[in-house]
Length: 213
Image (cartoon, helix red, strand yellow):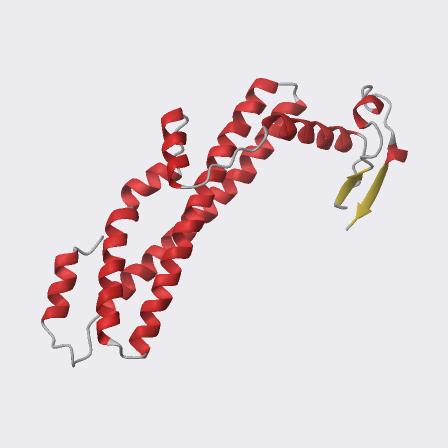
């Protein structure tokens, strides 16, 4: 729920400026919104990782079309994440400013910041529609264009990402699975990797360095 600006102002106007202002409602509301945005941020971040894993799985099954589609979805999620980060940082800074002014008992500053925050909450953090826009990502180009107008648009190079996925898949195919041991593979990219690994039945283990954790 977003408290109307008029309601907040009326609460303040009931007390003279030389008396402590009741800003508890604003503080609680802003703190709640910050917590909710962090949850959304975590979800979108998880989606970014999940979509890349899905693209990698498609590539492993030679389904380039679906892999590219998953990477495009991931691009949109990355932009949502950047937008969330920007909005969350702004809100956190204003919240910190508000609490500092409360501690300093600067009544006029408290009133001004509280009103600004209440306006921002109304305009930018209506979570009923915001969650729908951020979590349930629409795939239409119009949404992407609208998002690009709000923040710098990040476009992950699909060709480069597809090549990277192919390298990872090839590397994993050349490393034997060892039960209960996790490992990463570092590629020697000074070699012509694609030519060496064109035949998946001839693993070039000498070209890899296995790092066991």
